[in-house]
Image 1 (cartoon, rainbow, N blue to C red):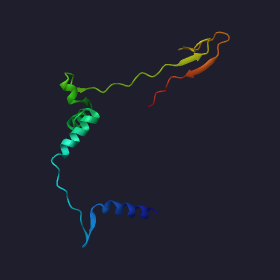
Image 2 (image 1 turned 45 degrees about the vertical axis):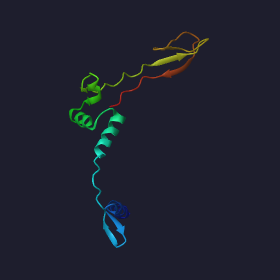
Image 3 (image 1 turned 120 degrees about the vertical axis):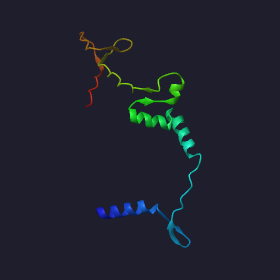
Image 4 (image 1 turned 135 degrees about the vertical axis):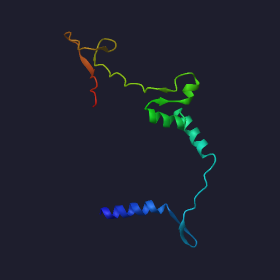
Length: 125
């Protein structure tokens, strides 16, 4: 069974290397590189991520967030990545006459009704 999938995968992978011509099977023509290809990729990266392709490479090497447009505005070229946000606090909400009242700790006053409880998130290792 695995050999069927392996042979199918091999056929599909190698199928992109050849194509049919009127005279038979031939190598696929190699397109010449377009002079605007790198400019298009650079513009695509800059529009979508606000970073150039070089910024992505330098950021990958240094492990920081690097951006040329940010440096042009006067900020630092490379900055540390922002830390994780603080986990949300526990919230206990009780029904009252108008809106629910919410507290950080349980409010145990006689006839109060707990209508909602949002536990603090547990850290993921």
